[in-house]
Length: 313
Image (cartoon, rainbow, N blue to C red; front, side, top):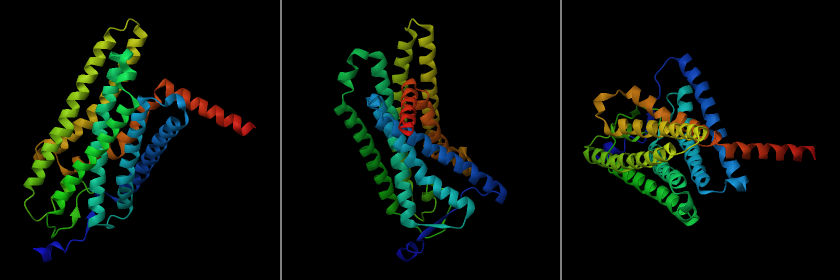
């Protein structure tokens, strides 16, 4: 078994098995999405760091969400773009597990950050007078650090359980990156322990946080209903509904992937679901959470005016 285990030192990511013309079309489309993701999230990070008026807990959490989105895209999209042009390019065993670890870390961190952000909005809307005391900078740093630490440790547990498995062939992963379930299918040993840990972690990191987010937004919506101004109520509903759409898609697709019976969805459908995490979600988050915000728009105008004045001088 040990001899066979050393046979697989690299994997081939099959990616999207389509015609050449479609793959070239997807390469151009995904490259555009990738550029928009980096530009949008980079713009948010730049504005938050440069404008002192955005140095608040809400934008502190948004900056970490932008970091996670950039990291998401950089971890999976370049490899996917390479595979679209050169499908047979291999990835090393160590590189594959590193990609798995990073993807899990960023995915789990985003789950926890969405909970923290919903709690921040709940405190701001339902307890505005106590907001500064509850969401102190020390508390914010603690929440963010805990999110990153818990996500990294849980991802490390998953990767450690993969390392105990022998891989003796085949070496083709039917995915566009080293997703944990696709990697486990290549193990020539019993993966029941891995599956149980994945399910338990999904309950802890998906179902639990989703319930907390829904409770927070339910309280927020009840508070919005008490707003006297019709215009204020409309704007608040618009903001909350867009946030809930992102949260629903993020958690819903993850629950379908890791908790639903595997016979319910095909591997090609799984790839489409994971495109949401790698491309669509990181690209949409800056628009939904930040660029529609009046404070961010004003910060962008101030930055552009400042740049224009400096060029005139």
